[in-house]
Length: 125
Image (tube, rainbow, N blue to C red; front, top):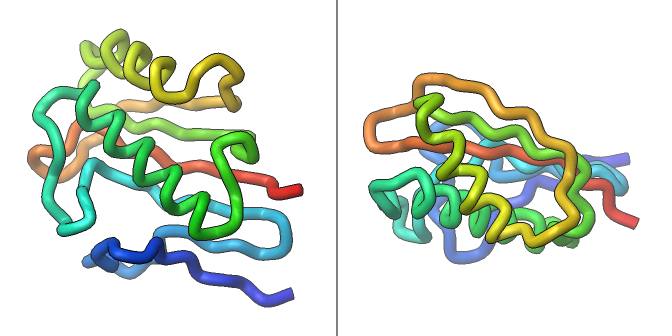
């Protein structure tokens, strides 16, 4: 079974050696997405603004790979500051609605200006 490399139409290709997503069979892995818009510019200065942009980017990769947020079984969130946790959760819940996938949240260093990164795993019916 071949892998399909996912690159949402209209987005800037990553400057690092990775693809936005990879699908093999009914499994779609979304690479870590950050708060870049289609032109590769950082969107937002707060964790809430960036979380909404990051989740929009995750959704775009899912859709380009033939999936949706309903197919996501796991999201991993990477925050740069533990004090952002409550604000992140609020924006996350607002974006995703009610039935949440499993999630892990860890604290990491990200390039300057970036406050959150999210990757995900979807299983497509």
